Image 1: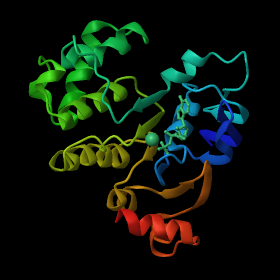
Image 2: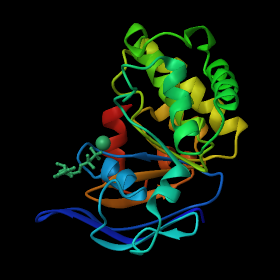
Image 3: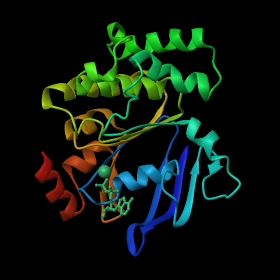
Image 4: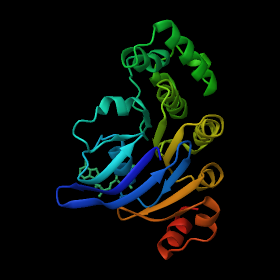
Length: 242
Ligand code: ADP
Ligand code: MG
């Protein structure tokens, strides 16, 4: 299991947001996490690379135990790409500079190699002609595709994607989902996606997890979860979003 979570708890002050999560994701698996707002989905993703301190339980990512005080967290983070709802591109850099920054400064790759790789990734996300633009000149959907290319430039083992289409105008969502589908189908990167795009989750994921109240309420292959949910709470959530 490339991601192995046992009894994960996370509190903010007296507010226990994750109440004991067990979660195992196999290498190369594509898992979608769905569930109501405020149920702790983003907090879960952020705990997986310790952007949030973990209150209790055990989290192991590609063999690194994050709760071990001796873990080299930067090494773990280098294996995990994360893309957020807000694209978080560096506004003062061009698209190309955004993508080559971490490969050069974190992985120590040469500039020439990084530029060549960045250009091929921009082609993959359909934006090769935007290399020298600044992010502010791009649509939200284009910025999000650059953010995905930037994450891929680190050759991650794992991609964590937190509602990456939720801030986009509806007509821009499809292109971003196409890029995600392409990654899911053509790479062996393990993907954990929080999404409200149920059709996409149905088509692309190996497994869907319904999250509620800081817990995994139920999980299963998409056919099972969408067509035959076991919990009334899942049924009402699904009918509210579809
Ligand atoms: P979701 O992504 O499912 O909408 P979140 O993980 O963002 O849920 O939030 C779950 C709960 O944790 C919410 O009640 C939210 O207010 C709380 N929370 C999230 N981040 C923080 C924080 N940094 N400080 C305090 N409370 C937080
Ligand atoms: Mg969230």
